[in-house]
Length: 104
Image (tube, rainbow, N blue to C red; front, side, top):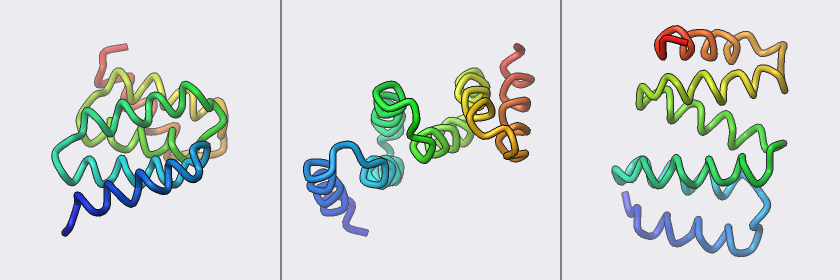
């Protein structure tokens, strides 16, 4: 795929709608595809820090951290998401798994 073009388009969307989670999640996915996972994590961590109510970015961040085996952060962000959406069993299981694998 043309990932440079995808990043450019995602950046244009971000400039036009800086508070929307969709363009940030999209850019994070593109960054992952181009082996720039650290940038993807930083982008989404900044987003959830600046906008704690952005559950879409939080879910995307947890998914990336899960794939990267960053269990301590999976547990940290997963427990935060569980407190926001306690009825989501998948998130609860992921948070518990992260805590167990991180040794917490």
